[in-house]
Image (tube, rainbow, N blue to C red; front, side, top):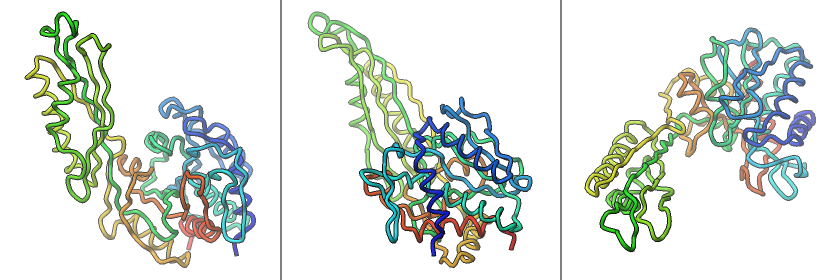
Length: 363
């Protein structure tokens, strides 16, 4: 039987807009809610670093402990104008997405904590972390100020079924190549010009794009440049990404891209400046890793079959693992996330909250 209180918590959160970088109304609601439970939440002061109008909400319980429960405050689309529809087996939205991609994880965690507080359930020390900009940049997770004792984290955002958790995830390296040519009049003096767009085109055509192996791809996404049809273009900018399950697979591809742009520029008498950085880095947990064992134990205690899987995309678990905090992303069962058909089964919402309950309660 799904708790009506859990459903109401989700609906309460879904009524609050919190687009990426504009999560302040959600953070204010959380701060009040957690204080009313007798807890001591705080804003961690990272708003500027996260390019948001609010900081992350961090709430140590029992001193903070070694584990953190993490959920994003933002949703990719507005939710306040969407009418949630609660049917016999699910929550959906009339005319849009009800915000389950962000708010289901929050509701699952908050209900577990509320349940524990009201029942005087003995709890492990732990930390609640509600982040900004989970949709996209993961800036909140990258910058969150956490208690020093946190050694593992459980992110509540995977669209997979409850019981499933991610043991690995690809990373995305984004790159840019700034190409410098030399402007000249294309009609009267083309010989003295160096065409930056031609340089970029030569480099791009010399490279292989797409799938390099089963776990590694590359793509040139945009190219721009020029100053008018009558001017030999003095500059061009090409941008793209390399997606890889292992850092070691991405690095040689990035080096080849850099080398081809520099070679094409040098042969034409121009220049090229290549830059890249991880949008988020990949991670992989070894079998038997402590964070995986904890996820499995929580799933079994919640009556679920544990299922470790690779993730096809990134999550805040990538950002936390990159910080040296072992993290997995737990399945909460959101279907069609961010699309008009987005919904979550009531059973999945309940099981996601059971997972949070099992992680924080003293056995």
